[in-house]
Image 1 (cartoon, rainbow, N blue to C red):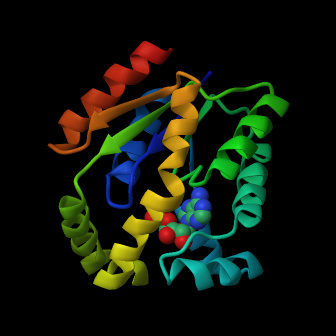
Image 2 (image 1 turned 90 degrees about the vertical axis):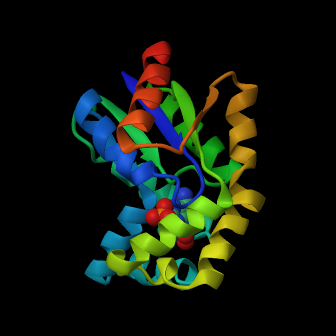
Length: 191
Ligand code: AMP
């Protein structure tokens, strides 16, 4: 079973690459941002709560995120493996993920980080904002805020997995195919 975390700042290409990896390795995609947007679209209480944070570029509180991921794992029938995208985003989430994986007899094989310079992230997110309909992709101040939140709250998660010998970073600039091959190369070393 292959369980990987695709890591990186907003706009790094995690969603694009996840879609390709799911096909290749037959994995279940757990993208917390997508799950929140799905709840939001359905107008669930969880979605309405998350919206307050998402629209400001802030992190949704850990307890909400962790509960949602736990439910998704528990309700996936016969998983072949998971790809986590946009999760964990805090060390508390990483600890919770490790314990929920081990409770289910699984573990994280590795975290792959996509490295992209800030300036490129801003251009990519603004471009995505033209079609994504996402409030948080359209306002330069909110884009800036999300990158800052990533540096302050999420980057320590890289260190958390590095200490376990489960962290690798790759260059996230280039064509979608080139980046995909860099990721596959790292995954094939893990399994
Ligand atoms: P994303 O689609 O991954 O860029 O996530 C969009 C927004 O959803 C983020 O800016 C956060 O407000 C929220 N979000 C997504 N994943 C998480 C997470 N793991 N922890 C906290 N907030 C999250």
